[in-house]
Amino acid sequence: MDPTDASTDTRSPPAIDAEALPPSETATATFGMGCFWGPDARFGAMPGVVRTRVGYAGGTDPSPTYYSLGDHTEVVQVEYDPAELTYDDLLSVFWANHAPFAAPHKRQYRAVVLAHDEEQRTAARRTRADLAGRTGKYVETAIEDYAGFTMAEDYHQKYELRSTPVVADELESMLGDAFVDSTVTARLNGFVAGHGDDDQRRSLLADLDLPPTVLSEVHRRL
Image 1 (cartoon, one colour):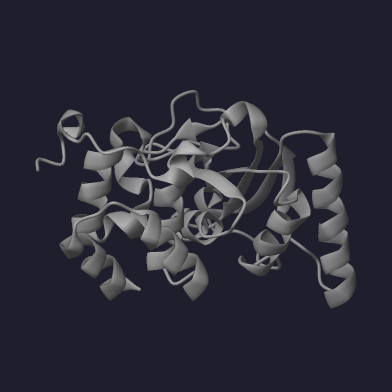
Image 2 (cartoon, rainbow, N blue to C red):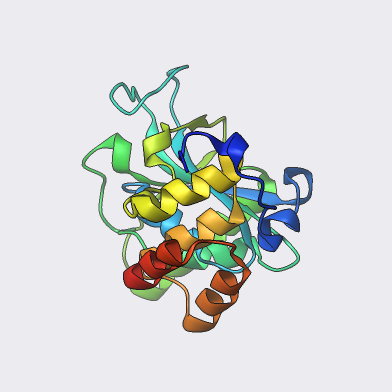
């Protein structure tokens, strides 16, 4: 099947996508943690995360691109189910998976929490103070107000999954324009990067209507 022709694929969306909360019912978090490929995969594997996407934020340039980033930073944006996951849960992953005591060499890769509201801002400041208190070190990670997000180019979205093109092409054929915002692609992007556990993987793969050759390639990466 031609992976560019999603209209020829008549399969129903996987149950995990069909049952996913709409954006109006999710909460959103935005973090800069260096190169955005790794955080996209790490958060995507977490139960309770509904969607992930990577892009550019934190600057003033109205139209940033990867090769013309201006004063923006690479960030991951996470939509999550607040009934399953708290913002503090996400902050725990955030603080444990970047270098909070190192000053950034480039604004593109700086560590930053972009708070969407006062509650997030308060939580970020509290957990930053806790980290500084536990370690006795100055935390360089910035906490700023969220002021918009520009999606990164398609080839950056679900980068780890796209590095297994047999799988990514099949899923793009199945999901079409929903590929980037799919819960399935978020999970698989995390799984092929080494995140998640065996029970999560078995449960998800059992739900996917994929050809044996594609499933075999997924298992090879896992």
